[in-house]
Length: 316
Image (cartoon, rainbow, N blue to C red; front, side, top):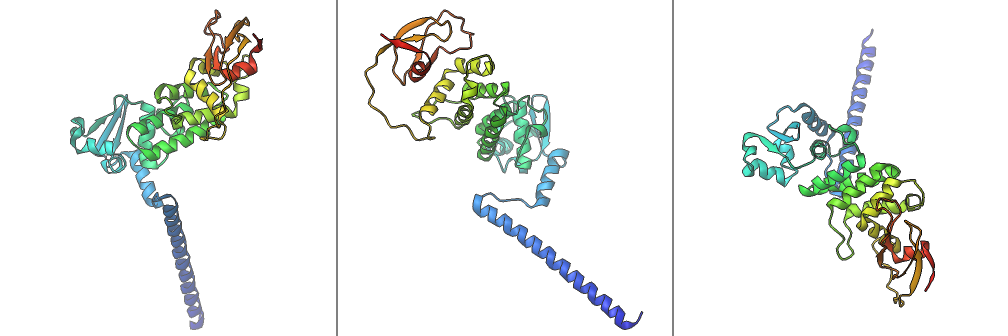
């Protein structure tokens, strides 16, 4: 091989190395610009892949752990630097507010084990899902409700927003199942009543999901019996669905109309089919006392507009 050939090979190698270096620099620059752009749009910094992966490995391995979180039968070997920088609650606990924390242990005795597992997983992954936490919840929809509750308790606004979004998506596919009813019942059992027209955001989610499939869910017959039983026994939920139906434009209320003088009308009882006479205003929630068993699926409490559209027989 002569000298000119060797020089050509060397030159080609140098050119190839230069091209690879420029390509790598361009890729890194693009990735940096994407992260900077996302930060400007959302206000949320995006960790580099290496940092994110390293943090996730710490959650799995428990290596370099300096704090243990205990809930139920589970123990997680975690890291103060991860927990305390994301939660004021854990920061105060580790700074000496809890006697147990001085021994390197934080007990969460009153919290749901699945919700705690999801919260801790979120600290290290910026996300959570039912199939990635142990123990997994029996209902994904109910898990999202419980995660919202624990995020609200420990003032984790980002996690709370994630739980709302996940619940909304889950209800879109699980509305035909019993999980739908369980999630709604849990929401109304643990959230405050509507105050001056402002509905709790979890209630807004379940009411919106119900309205999308109201025709099927409230149809007469034996279908969706579990949902109907829950709806008739949860009066606040039924009232919220009715109000949302009368005010279909989201948060914008329907303009008030002059209320007409109420008229005595005859109605048929949806439980026992007997007739009765009552004076019911359109927007009044009226309850009819019936001799039929209360476990019967048909309602006996609904808005006047519903009584008139479905069970009106005549006047006088």
